[in-house]
Length: 216
Length: 216
DNA sequence: TGTAATGTTTACCAACCGGTCAAATTATCA
DNA sequence: TGATAATTTGACCGGTTGGTAAACATTACA
Image (spheres, rainbow over the protein chains, first blue to last red):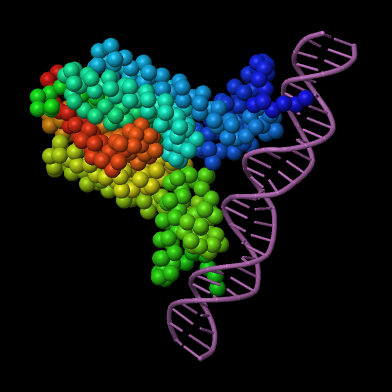
């Protein structure tokens, strides 16, 4: 009997694992470049190197593929924020959070663009994830930052907007890569741009959050 | 005789001006939400309140509409950067640039998302604009910032990445609005979030760019 | 007012979209 | 090996896509 993928409860075969892997890899490539509506199943099938019906044997709908991709990626995407340690030194925690986020923008630009596309176009598919787990995690870390500020270890500031600004500045190098390259020009757009960015951002945030007189 | 819009060289009639205005307004609404490939001509026609063939009488193709929209919006979008004044006070120039960019994110979120979608999806339609006029403008202002730093008026830093970070942090509130609202929650996501953001960003950038010992 | 240019609509098209189906092929394992 | 289950394929479907043709309506202007 032919059972569609979603209905199977037994453990997956070797072929299933391999194919699903190839499909999600191809889906990431296509969705991250065109968004959900702009992507086509044919295109994903072509990138994955298989026929469309074959692809739809593993994921019954385009939406199912997208959902599987999002949930798989979202988890690892939030890892850097989870590592944010309340017991650590504030300055070095913020510094290494920036560095980790920037490394992810460099090493996983497609994942970043996948979310950017999703949020940009209304985030209807991940709204619950945003309002639930994401908000909870940010609330927790915001409390940590607020405590540091209260203890005088960093300047007083709105912790939510601090987190937003770290997200935006780092992900900018993945999401707006084309623009960054165009503006920097050939000579300065090499791989060194990530180190330049890291140096600048560390300076900006560390200096910007330093405690100073009259900043209360 | 019926001449397609693009072939007419005479000055436009009143009806042409009105309709093209309505069309571009509708196109902005739809393109900014779904990107080029995700948007449909039917949808734009519906928002504009006219039939699809009627719309295609004014813009012969979907691409022509998109092109017209981009070139029209790009110009005003760069205005804040053009106002950046080499003769002004560095700190207040940077401060008011941030404020103007943030105001645009608040007042023209669709324009911001239009570009975000475009750049995110490869920017094939505006690559020339980015490498030409945009790069030239940024180069010019980067030189100004570099001169300020050299004169000791602000901390030494990479001017390009400074500009990138101002772009990303401010546009974040337009492009990722859904996420910002989700994370802030109901009570803190009101219109006041723009003032909170302005306060935070000014603090971050002004403090972050302050000249300090050992920062050479 | 008449008429030529401009503007609008209905009906339509070929290509493409996400998805189905049944038949054919391949892998699994008793 | 044989039979059963898992996988793959080509042909196809109804709906949507961007765009066209031509008839019809309206406007501008001599």
